[in-house]
Image 1: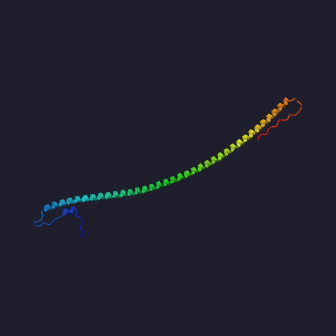
Image 2: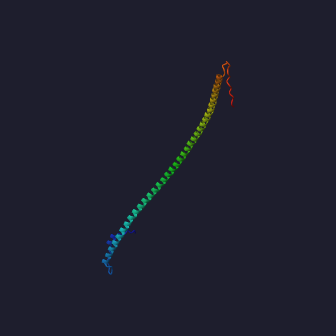
Image 3: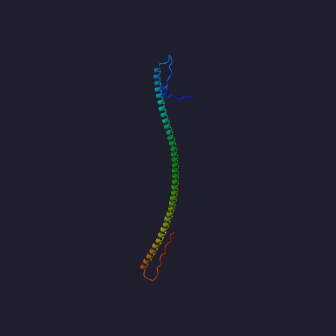
Length: 171
């Protein structure tokens, strides 16, 4: 036979048969009232504790769910941070390679330009020497002509043709 839980009302309604030499009915009723009040108080406390327990279990479940969500968010954030770092590293390496390539091209162009300039300087020096040589020859020619004319003026006019002195060749 299953027993149902005892309630304070059950205790208050409880009636005992009277017998000789039995208990004082007034004391029994007073005791039953005390037991009923105590039982009601204890049941109230149990219900209150059950409500609090349910509330705190719910709060714990919510906190655990928030913790799980935070962990998932942190994992996603870490993954995104790792991807950003990897992308930044790849971009930096690409930029370094491009900068090295540009630097190599610039150095190569500078070397080529330097070679062209040095070649042009050499050509100009050669041209200058040639011009100096031609100018010297022209000056020498004018000097011989001038000396011939001066000799001609000094010499009596005899009709003789004066020959120009020959220039000594320089090696």
